[in-house]
Length: 394
Ligand code: GLY
Image 1 (cartoon, protein in one colour):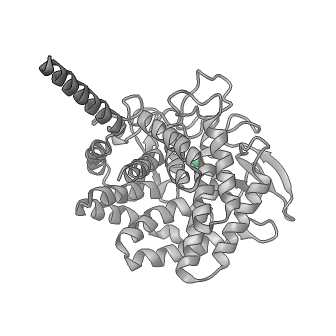
Image 2: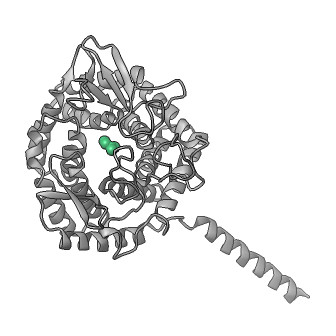
Image 3: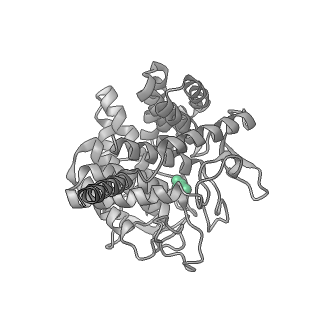
């Protein structure tokens, strides 16, 4: 009788320990995902040794699509190699990251695009954070100066493209992602000019780019006096639709602007955007959005894994700045997104997907380009989100 009681007690304790262990199990095996990413990118480097063009995606005929260094995505591959170095600490990744970072150096003088945050700050900035190589800093300071030339004080915004259907001052929501670079430049030089440009742009964007439901337009056209001549889309389904990656850029963008300024206006904006994104009735159960929240044929529309990767990484950071209830909500959704991306539905196996990590991103559906494909920036933000998830568990 006594023995039976002890046996039952022991069984109960064993069951509880097993359940607790299950609860404590991380949902995503970051170590395993990085090990697979290393194998895939070793293969990528072997099959694509030419640093004049960076891996971008896959062509419709199945071949690897690469792009010149002047393309807005040229910094992401080097950025991902730095993340492999940061996680693994293996010198081979530092060497590869340095090579692919320096391959972009001429873009420090590029004044024809606003994308220098992506192209220059991601590879050189990550490299500088990890190595303090003074060469990277010099290149970045030139890059920040080039970016600042595109700011017009009358309009209060940085010009994104030089032309949009005949209009000469288009600003896209993605532009928020360049501001972190300018805040960095002020921290490094003490010159407040960059900080002022960044906050002015961020304020104009809050005023002009958002709808009452906190979704954003893709393109806003500015007249010379700063008034708005039109609100359009380029990569979204319609002028009035919510292009998924644009929402992700603004969520991530205002979160980083809050980190750089500690001004609550930007935190409030990031929260509003996050709440629009995560509560949208068209966000699927796996939390990987369709390429546009208002795409006309939902549920028969392509997903955009890149938007999920950007949003997941952004939400992990935002969760660190909000109250307890929101913190849990944002962390849970960011984790769910990352779990989906890490599942076979989105995560490529070794030997497939032209060695990119994620499948099922959509670059520009209305332009009939890069639909349901891997994209180099989806991989970059996926690796970043994995590291942010890993840090939460330490
Ligand atoms: N910045 C362009 C894009 O997100 O496709």
